[in-house]
Image (cartoon, rainbow, N blue to C red; front, side):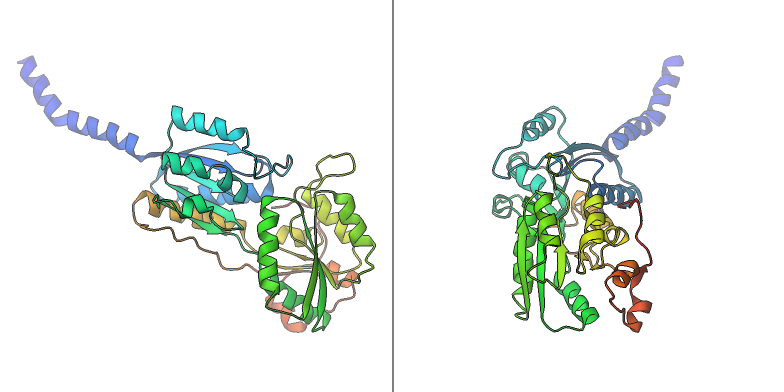
Length: 344
């Protein structure tokens, strides 16, 4: 009798028990996130926080392991294999992930061979350049991503309106990095369409050279575009926080500054038509869900819509620039310079 009862019990409840075990295993998605920068870098934090928040809105259960190349504080050549690549490969072998999330060009380039070798679905965000050829030429197509593009031409046209000038001479300031190479190419392509806009480029990680060029403004630039102030070093080769760079430029530049994100304007930049790291994270999460559910058949990288027009009133007042009345109602105006600045 007891045996018959036990058999009946198993027939009723064991399928549910087995189903629950299988379901639990199926819904836990192991994600490896691979970042060019450090975990405390504001841009990385904004993208990853929004990525996780968007994934959490769905029924997807996931766990994320992070790897950080940290190339802002410790610049590395893209032509050299970073030591972290071998650690990532060991992790892939020991605990193969279900999915990979990549932020920035450096990380995507460094692990592109591993992506082809292990054929793990992935999504990228914050890519300023193009997808590495090894990926675009591969037969593996279970990936997509989100490009990052700066709205340089629109920002320059806005400045021309504020200055009431048709012709401008600009100084583009870049760090020496993989991202800066892509940004420089993009700026060249954008500005080539506007022959009335002339610009020079300074690309270095030496902040002293930035300072000299900014303060000894013999070229009489109409504006500065410090588009990549993230990997700069002082005279002692010590890393300088980007918010300190932006603050220094605000206090010492004799000309307006065009930046790319809202926190730059809070720190003292004159204007920006913002790109939105958080939007990149959200779009990357949506693409992740599509890839994992086989709803995305081919790579379709996208560009999020531009963010707000941002102006710092304290900066325009300092430079004696008048803000047109219509912009006062349409732009997002920061009335003071945040000190110390919180880059969020």
